[in-house]
Picture 1 (cartoon, one colour):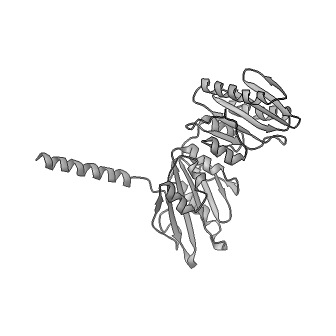
Picture 2 (picture 1 turned 135 degrees about the horizontal axis):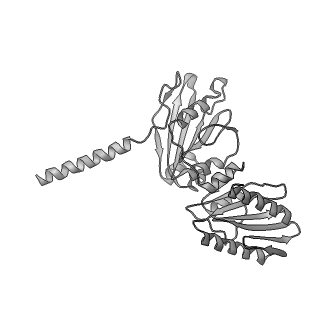
Picture 3 (picture 1 turned 90 degrees about the vertical axis):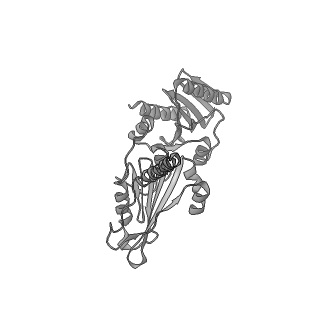
Length: 299
């Protein structure tokens, strides 16, 4: 009798687990949502090797973030037309936004929590998902179809907020490129970063493209507490000052001229540290630090 009860318990657990799995929201637009179009089976890619095999290169960009899975569904329409919906799931909204922020091509549109479209593609991020909808054909009758399917997909996904510091940069009209590692930052900017740059994997960092005509851009780092931000600020300043021709520093900001055409600067704003790696002069460096600091303060 005890064995029978134990077996019944196991069956109930398995059924419960299966029910929870089946209860996962269906993000894809249903078959028949567009006349004449029918969807195929959903294909799932979870491991690193599976993602590389599917993408045939380029997977490392997605693996820079906390990738969970990719689900793909292909729809077939009239006259051998095809359309693909890719749904990339990540650990949280920062990762979904981060992969979206890497590509700034296409027209900005209201789609999800941020979207862009081109003639054959619509892509957006929402919640912890990044979605790409595309067709390889450029027929006139297919124009706008990717956007329609993207909208239908977006309706099935719940929004989730970005961390406050990242939200403030976006609200200031910037395009912060979110990263979770120094290696990703180096690939993104094609420059070598000092050893004192430490990116907290949990909170990440953001690269901001040039804000003035005389500046290369800046990076915003974020840390879980004030003590860590202070230590990173001090370490960065030591790196800068060691190679400086002339420098000036206050409690929260330091700037240095490395030569006649290169200046660097670092500033601490709460739990954030800003570093400007290559400005034309100290005036341009100060201007970039000012713009980023004001954005982080919400001014």
